[in-house]
Length: 117
Image 1 (cartoon, rainbow, N blue to C red):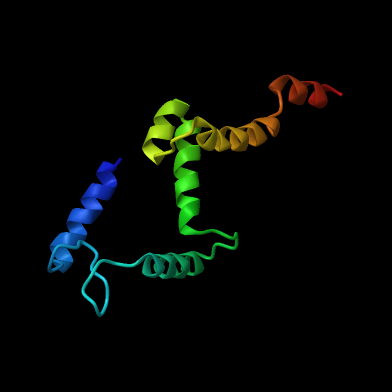
Image 2 (image 1 turned 60 degrees about the vertical axis):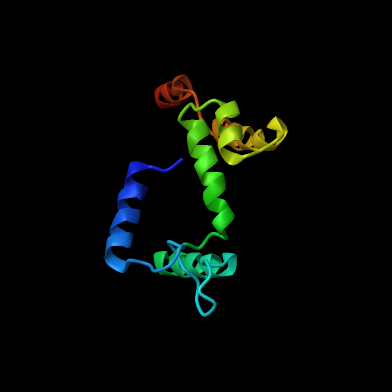
């Protein structure tokens, strides 16, 4: 799934840098593609620059993507397909995350009753 915002950013990147060869994001010396480790280093640098204190990784982006889809009402089966999970149980990890969020929600009635006390 490629968002319109990302597609526009990629076009802008391509227009600016005009990468040579077959790779949109070419690697260093060997002229291959960008390596997984290079992506991790770029991500770590961005995390530091953003001042993020939590322990995060590139894989955190995948979890965040799935969690946001689920919270916005996307069916779990579609998320399973998008993430490439063979087993539904793997995708159901994200429902556990949502249950923790749901447990923190307090009824508006409880807040009303506390104000009157």
